[in-house]
Length: 155
Image (cartoon, rainbow, N blue to C red; front, side, top):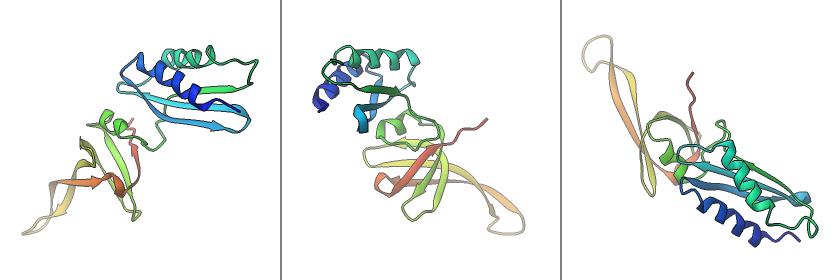
């Protein structure tokens, strides 16, 4: 039986060495596979993933348990999972899918304990006369109303 508490402790020690890093997900999968996803306020280097991996591996006894370990950083295509990821992405464009399946896209301008704020520009018909005018829009969205949020990568 995999000692999950020991793995968590080793992982926490490894993360504490760099205050910019934070855990996204720790999963114990079939066949003693340990999956660790970490992020950092300014991203995660391969070097840091290797350091965390070694810190866990070198303190677990392979004689006792055979295991495989994967330490990875989030894929940009994945949805944001923890609040600190939102904070890290302030001033970037987010595509947010709400619980009612509607979509909102805008620049993430603010993150609080319970909500985020997005701002964007929209073209709307002029209140008087013909033609369109560009207006600034914003939305405050509660975390509980977010189905998924992804950073929009613009090339």
